[in-house]
Image (cartoon, rainbow, N blue to C red; front, top):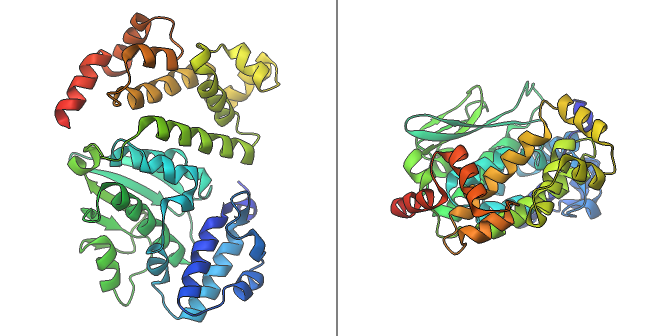
Length: 339
């Protein structure tokens, strides 16, 4: 990957600018000095080179003199900063789903960072690693990221949510108290990755704000956005077309190829180059949507059957048992008992 072409959301620059103004600093000269056009800041159609964002962070740290500036900026975070991804997180079923979306669609934020989701017996962890940060990396930018991801969880599940433990890749700060105020007392600095470890019971608890249909619609918005950003990402384009076509019936690979203005052979070759296949993408997309829809008790099995492109409820039931080991009704009943 050409690191000189990696970009970040312009809304992050807008958030930093908003914070600077609240602290009495004019951000526009800093934008210009960092090579960022002020009119591009906050424009949802624009992305900013990550190298320029890092330059902006260095300038912001110089004018504020606050090494914990990232945590200050995170206080102003709202889900809309992440566009459709933030809104999809708001409508997620559980915090686990929130973290899953952050990992799955992490490219909307930055292609350089390595996002993973890990589970242990007691926790579900969001892991974000900065590969080879180097001496010029501004750790305040990652402070903002981890604090914002935690804030996303708190907005959806309650302000009392704190990680069981937090790992930060940054050097140990002089003042650790400000970090403990945000993340809780148990913080590991100079770790090999950034990690939020959430209690498993908390992460799997149903959220009162859950809205599967809104989550799916915003997922589609994110998929479309990523497809526009990377025309070479055939996987995202195929997923997008599958979701679009499913209510009209289970699409064939040939139909999707026509929608993408490519030949069937070319589509197969490109998917193979990305270590996947049309069958795998179709199955995964149907499964993810099915799990989302089945948690919405207002949807009948017949409606879900239609939305997922199955011709008969019995066909959907067989597929659902293959995915989960339970029938749709059994799965819904068990989810309701947990709630």
